[in-house]
Image (cartoon, rainbow, N blue to C red; front, side, top):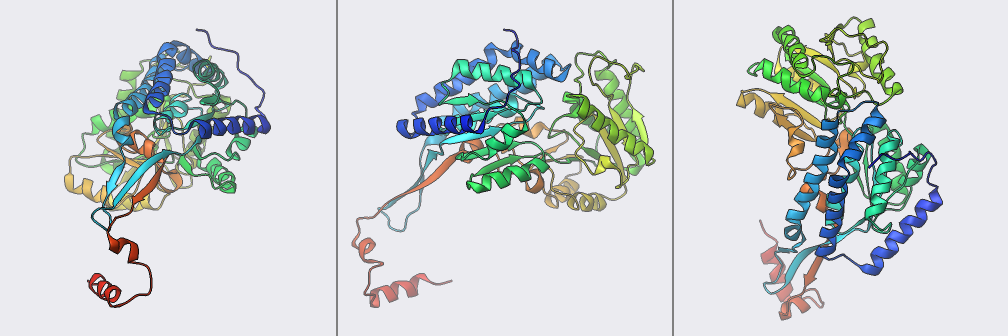
Amino acid sequence: MNTVTPIATDTSPDVMKALLDRQRAAFLKEGPPSIETRLDRIDRVIALLVDHKDAIAAALSEDFGSRSVEASLLLDVFTCVGSLKYAKAHLAEWLKPEEHEALFPDAVAKVVYQPKGVVGILSPWNFPYQLALAPLAGILAAGNRAMIKPSEVTPASAALMAQLIAGAFDETEISVVQGGPATGTAFTSLAFDHLIFTGGTAIAHHVMRAAAENLTPLTLELGGKSPVIVGRSADLADAARRVMTVKTLNAGQICLAPDHVYVPEESVDAFAGHAVAAVGAMYPALKENPDYTSIINGRHHARVQGLIDDARAKGAGIVEINPAAENFSQQSAHRIPPTLILDPTEDMRVLQEEIFGPVLPVIAYRDIADVIDRINARPRPLALYYFSRDGEEERRVLGNTTSGGVTVNDCMSHVTAEGLPFGGVGHSGMGAYHGKFGFLAFSHPRAVYHQSKMVEAEYMMRPPYGEAMRGFLAAAICK
């Protein structure tokens, strides 16, 4: 299947409002869907991804200028399919009512999970399919319908997504709306029953304000500056290789990418050498290498290059990792060689802004306590990565820092465990999804209580109160 021509026009607020109304009306008319219907909807998303994986990869490469086909299949298709299959395998278990203790022995107290209704998905450009369709695992498992607003920065991917969803679903089940910032603003103002937004913290402020007008529940996945700590007991070469593997994946355009790395002061040069060797082994050449993804567009290329130029101007050491010594001044895409920033200072933009590119500041440290203090002085990150074979130090680091998630002795691996929650904390996000946590996020836990037949249950709270009540309270209110 060929990619489709992107649609440039915005979807109007009235059209989106009417679509939401049709989805909600269908939801209310049909009621909570059966487990068979939920499984069928999940299966249709899986089939969409599997049957059109090559077209999806082609659209992604068109949007990026050049994007690794294998990376697209791994990160935008395989990950989605895995999330959806996990939900299928566990859905029957998740749907079982939870029994809880009641005041009287023959009373029944339970939690029944209801679908919320219509969920809005506002997804970003760095993983257009993963971050738009993977949330459907929890959304559909919970019995909801969905409206998706993909990023306008990846128009070919958005147009193809709209076509594929329309071919597999009635618009009252799942629909895609396209457009630019104006459409996105109007989308967040709709009275969804839940809204999930993945993107930058600055935009999240506006999303929260818009959602507040309708008291719309939110899940926010925002990223941030995820730190790496390399302990003195770590295998330095292994740590450098693993950090650079993820830092160069999708050219560092990942919310979970390692943003900066703390290295013992006596090991900075060795770490840099290992990082250079690791990149050279993965990418003997970069400029036209199909495995090395381009920065998404000229604006972001200029932004990332500006971070490097700012650090250079303020005295940082710049290590451009360019194994084949290629000239990047003229190229068919917007690639930037992996770049280390040595001896960065706090006044440099690279330590102030989310990098979202293949640039890695390397910060020397003497004492792990100073690293913990520096991490805690910043907004809480989406992830923390720690390399060490020192169990006591690991407990100290993890016990005295807060992040959305943690991977020890690797980067980003925690997100591959579908049963773990994925989400941030504070400036890096709100709420979590993946696995059962997605099912719970997009469900309403409804309390259901069947009263006891015991006479005490009927008369316990009814006046006039007498000695029996006073005796009960005296006995019950105690240490």
